[in-house]
Image 1 (cartoon, rainbow, N blue to C red):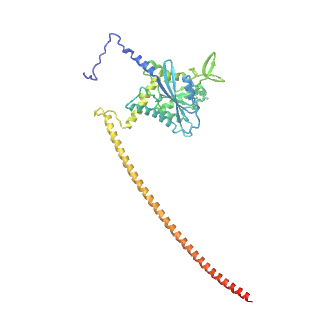
Image 2: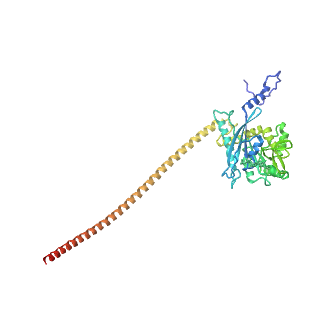
Image 3: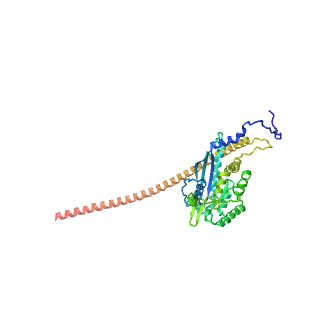
Length: 413
Ligand code: GTP
């Protein structure tokens, strides 16, 4: 067979009839539908900002979630997976909550556990990809496809924590900022707040997820939605009566906020963008942009390089050899340093033992001296006692003699 050159002209052929490959898209769809989809959402925001309520409202069901404590010592991530079905489409939805985010006295490193979690999911996927026996088709993808960043409605713009966190997240996940509990601010204030937030994100160079405008079917809708960011959302799972209809809303003394009314908030827009129009793009961006960046960095760190087109070398083989040599060098080095450490330890122990022996010897000598002194002292005492006893005996004998003489004298008289 002749090799085709890159510049060779390709001929388009007209088919005389239907041969069947026009069913390829349908085949693909059927296969994907049968397999089901997964979508992983990360909710970042301070405790009580309305994360759980918003997720419940978005998906129209209650995901049981315990109320988080305001007194967490550090930020923890909690993930829950739910199997949902809409008509024939199955969706495995994972919602990851950040517990204790923004609650600590020092929030400087609040973003760290979040980045660690995102990296850990990329690492898991990379490990699967690098396995000899890969099972990517049935792999449970836990990489985060969208991060809803909840901004407090109070204040004039973003807090330093929001800016820092979003900046850190931008290269790892698709960040979609939302102004939470938008019903607590007036329409005018909300407009100003949204504008300030976007200006601030722009001036600090924070890249948030932009709804794609390449596909002409959704270009117009997506570009208009890009101008609505950040979405101002209100969450509620309560049914309230408006006229003769029951709607999801929040009831106030002054009226009702209908969460699915686009004049009241942007919840419908968020749902439309997240679940109806751009879910696949979010998944694609996660794989092609964020994961790709992680993978590239990781492989470069491990010493892999792409094939050098000039030298025509097979760099995977070279890299493997280089890594093998480096590994053995490191192993030898480790062995040598462990041997040295062992010798030093033995020397140290020997010196310690000698020191202990000397201490014991000195102590023994000292005890011997004390014992000798005491013995001398006791002998001196014994000698004195014996002398005293002798003197006493002598006095006793003398007294007895005297007494004998005296008694004799008396009896003669
Ligand atoms: P943790 O999971 O404990 O971190 O809290 P959370 O961020 O999930 O907040 P949650 O959804 O539990 O809501 C906390 C409180 O805020 C509840 O009393 C909600 O009813 C209320 N809430 C939630 N969303 C909104 C909203 O859009 N507007 C108003 N006004 N209140 C809301």
